[in-house]
Image (cartoon, rainbow, N blue to C red; front, side):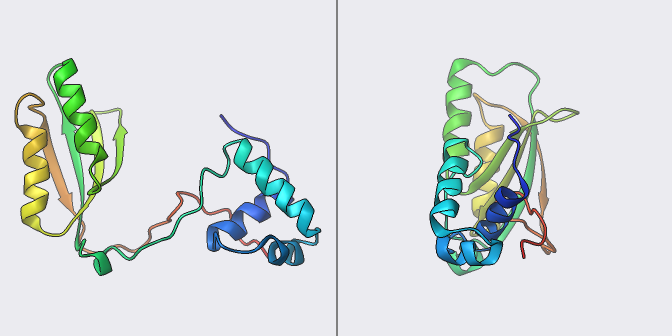
Length: 158
């Protein structure tokens, strides 16, 4: 569901995307509103679900996650209840960063970060083993040129 945001809301969100810990008073100074007005807008944006949370961005390599890969998976059948439960447990693992149902030749696309090729193989093995028995195609990332944490960039907030 799309939410209509005015220019001030967009500027607030853009500033928070740059640093989620930016104080309301500092945002107020940057966009020309009072601190209480900014705080009220942030609260409204949270209630509307525009802002789903504030988080810290951790360098994956600093945490030992040196391998980034995309795993495309497809099945020849609808998942049984047992297979669906297993799939949900796999995507709940902290190595799986994103999981999407997709259109086209594949059914699912997963973005994963692991500490090694061996652990990537283990994860893929869970997808290909019964009861899931998915066919997979794995693409290992050689270099990341752009990664927009938070999923969106709204442009210049100044």
